[in-house]
Image (cartoon, rainbow, N blue to C red; front, side, top):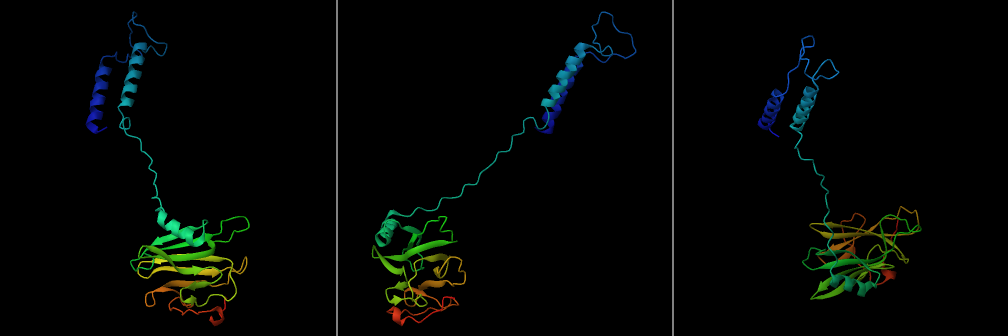
Length: 241
């Protein structure tokens, strides 16, 4: 309520107050016919009128009609649902228990791709951090058909062979991490799981190579691409630690 409205309210209260009897002198002569209260001879009617004025003034306060603040809850936008076409293609490559992790123009080539994996669910016996997978694929839409262009199972491989730094021994589980760069596109990191509590195994970086037009592994600086080997026997021995 603004100041002018408050002043009008007070003037109304003053007018009402003027119609009530004034205070009598505590030592003056009183009208014997006038009813008084036991409190020092103050008129009971006056007390009632005074209380009504006080209540009226309280209702005219600046906060009487002020709106109460409302709480707003921030709602996060829902993540885009996986298109049925992509989910169906992923299941055809890895089976029904397949989870699509990311999809879109992942390699910044203008073509649609997706990453799907068989993700190991979290249980009391599987409490390792991160996303643990047994198998993963990258597929690309080529002329309306989805084709596998990279696979992670016991090893890392593409259409040309086994990726550099892939372990020679079979790997039954991988910790998968990935990030998307606005320029270079998707980069994945595969860490072979050698055993619970082993934190010294380095991840193997995999990224799209625009020169060869395929996903290849990177050296330990994560800057230079490594060539594939057609067979495991030709893969250079790599230290996992």
